[in-house]
Image (tube, rainbow, N blue to C red; front, side, top):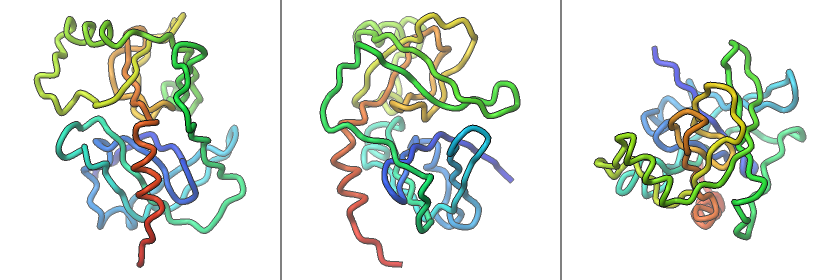
Length: 199
């Protein structure tokens, strides 16, 4: 038996976004039977539901592993479950940028918030080249991304998939990390979630 976890962000009723590479290996036949989506509603209170289906972004199979997947959830309605607000304009990523997620470093699920400082993309790519991650396999390089580093980070931590802004699993928090540019995926998300599925 294999157990896997990944970050999931609710973007609209019955749909969440996850890292495509994390969910690609889960067979569709196993989704409804063995997969659960869990959300933290507030401190000490979680809620979960079944997963109906997954939809990998088309660039996953042809361009990059580091892209998104839509997770179709199977639930009627929950007043406490509120999707995030997706922006419809390009925000300035150079000011007041934060990464938010959950970690289990102390064997307890805890919220982690990191203040992020923007890093020029050329400098970020140069960093990855110098540490030996030269994208020789271009499937690991995302197509659209921003880069940042945690300011005043005093912990030895590791970036995880699914931090808000959708980070890609990468080096420690004191090193530059790439965040997928979610605005570029919004048209695909809207088109994919507006389709009517018949079961």
